[in-house]
Image (tube, one colour):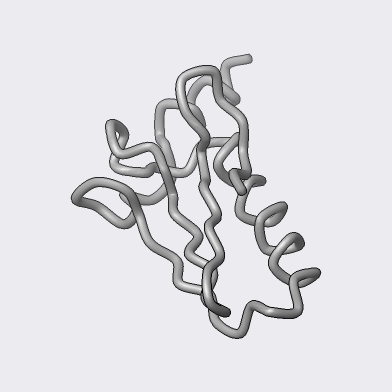
Length: 82
């Protein structure tokens, strides 16, 4: 199962196996910085997890070498100017 939609890659991926769900922030080229699309994607993934009664634990991780660099300053600046 994949949550979040971007043309080049999913912002967040979700995989469940054996009662464990792994939610991965999936923008390693940006060190998984949170932009507007990535801000909403984990909510949708967590709603999906809540409906799956076989999931007993959730692991949140980041793709690449970073968990999350924090907020994407560039997208914040773009929002203020737009």
